[in-house]
Image 1 (cartoon, one colour):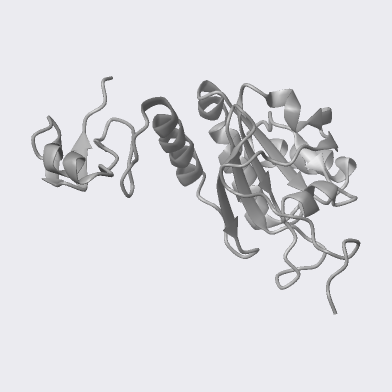
Image 2 (image 1 turned 60 degrees about the vertical axis):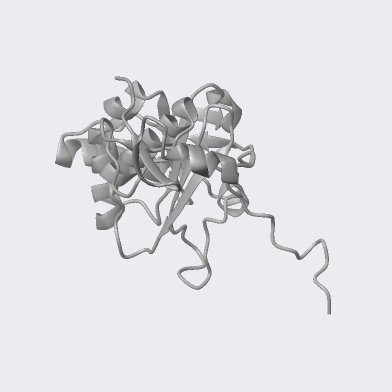
Length: 219
């Protein structure tokens, strides 16, 4: 039997396509994705408030908040807990760990945002969001998606590095190699014609072969 329109699962976000718009209650009042047009957004979900792994992640994001802000990035957290639970947990984190949570946390009780972004995976839990990260650029386009299981915390350093790599690509139209950090050489896009491949070895790059060339970026 074919799946009807009423029972079909919503289409999930895809890379390089517009991020689903939302309007939701948060710890900083009602917010919409469109409120942050012109800024990059890191939207991340966590399974539940007052849980140890999630607490370590919130502490990690809080400690890097100013660095994300300098990159023009807005952090937004989310779970299906109530806004009251979020507020109590944030206050508890500030009291116990000495860090301030400056970013909004969406209270997605009706799961509308979670469903739009595919944050609930029944095989992991039917009533909790898994650890999703969506990096959305300043034009509202999804640029990266990362999913983690309930049991393992994310690396905030890696999320920060990925934002830097994406912004470097956007600004310079280059790629970045494994483990790339700002200041390191970047990868020049490979030529797409035979003539371009023949010319590549004569170009002023660090050329290993016609398809593999690096260069330094101007600081």
